[in-house]
Image (cartoon, rainbow, N blue to C red; front, side, top):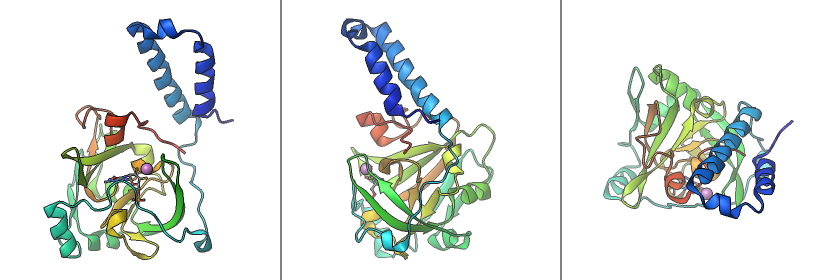
Length: 247
Ligand SMILES: Nc1nc2c(c(=O)[nH]1)N[C@H]1C(S)=C(S)[C@@H](COP(=O)(O)O)O[C@H]1N2
Ligand SMILES: [Mo]
């Protein structure tokens, strides 16, 4: 049985109908939001986190994979990397790992490759199907060696929002999910700049904003407290999107 977040939310909305005055009180609000956190935790517990996202046939691919959010980071550093066809780009893997890595595109290509045709769902209401290829994040993290105490994987990107890099994070269940890959190819070509060149995250069981483009750093951390404002991602910190955006 699956209890969707929507059902749970409808349930709590019904329970709370007519409680406007109570909700104004800080203590009541704390309890209300505590409940919401519990609902999210419950959803995570009830959904099989290792289940695969649907995959599609080549014919089902969208004719065009539209870009969203940043279409070109536009910084001097990124422009220089792009001018050199990303030969000088390195993806840093650090934080709570035993062997920090600095990986070129060639290095990413030397890992076992996974290709998958999946549907991307943006929270703004559009979807597109495309083929992605790259090593699994799990293999890359195994090469770096996750240390005891690591609980989250944080992604730092080349593009800036309000003067700071875009960032996102996932837990270790999603990090080691077989369809979670560091994609450097889209529909059998190198990633276009608008879709996150030279490398972006695909975390297929979650909504589009979790799929960090323009990857520069990947860090294993014990807690999200020191990251941005502490909610684990740019949109989570600034627009109140859910950190766990399971679909
Ligand atoms: N670095 C970075 N990653 C990002 C974004 C962004 O603006 N910057 N936008 C996110 C959102 S909201 C979506 S829907 C997808 C869009 O991916 P696309 O541009 O390949 O369509 O990237 C996500 N990852
Ligand atoms: Mo999105």
